[in-house]
Length: 404
Image 1 (spheres, rainbow, N blue to C red):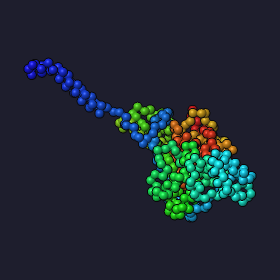
Image 2 (image 1 turned 180 degrees about the vertical axis):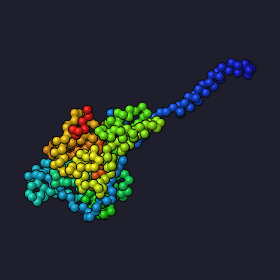
Image 3 (image 1 turned 90 degrees about the vertical axis):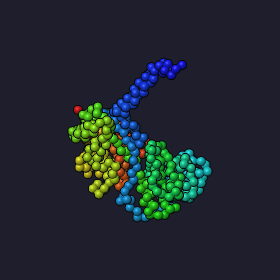
Image 4 (image 1 turned 60 degrees about the vertical axis):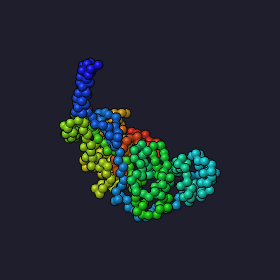
């Protein structure tokens, strides 16, 4: 068979192959030129979409600044735990009743001595006993101790969320010995990591500079940096109505239109969408211009303020305003700024914060200088305040913010 004859028979197939290759090249070029959403960033998580638009967020660890940690003396007091019991036998039963093994209950009972007021007992275990507790036993025992307000370190422990990509002690530059001891003493309750033994650690490592670093590290919190995704097809008017109600719709719409004018999907940071009080404080710690007790209630009641109302540093004023100026919101009909009350049976309102969107809230956890204003997941905050007793939620809205 001649070359010409062979080529003549294969010619159509060669033409077809060349055509297919050209078509594939053109297709690849067009694919590169086509506008399409950016790849998902593994650092970001998406929220449920709704009237607020499409949100995404990433986690950031923040810790108190140096100005908030004033080291005067090292808290190295020896271990002393209180439990109420009428007799040593009752004390042992209480220890066993929380789930502790017999040998641990007996060992703790042997350290007991009557409390000074004669009501109950003080347990004084050795450091080695406490360090050697297994994680599960520590959780059981410390949960029992947390039922008595005398055990402050257990009723109000350092806490860190489990539902996070962050590690509590990452980047703290603690020595391996200190970090190893810390991790032995951390215990778990629900979706929280807890820590109650700072004096014990400082007895083994008595150093003021270490105390400051430890205190800042243990006081760390996770805050969420949130972005609103904006596409050219987005209804800016509806988004501005959600984020700008009642008097900032035009300003919010202007920010969103600026983002929308750019090609492809753009993002608007949450800071551009919040009212002045919240915007100026987000991810920040109290500064010189803030009142001495910038509590959660002060924060929640001032969410929409331009200049904060100092009346809300007073709990009586907060209670009266909630009764006079707010209505309870029907389930799932929440809007930006609604006040969420955390109610604990037998205790009352233990926390308040503001609803943002999806499952996100704006919060300040307490009035301390070491507590920042931050964005949190509502479920994580419920876990935080449900120790040692659960909370229920109530959503409240200012009467003058009811939408027509």
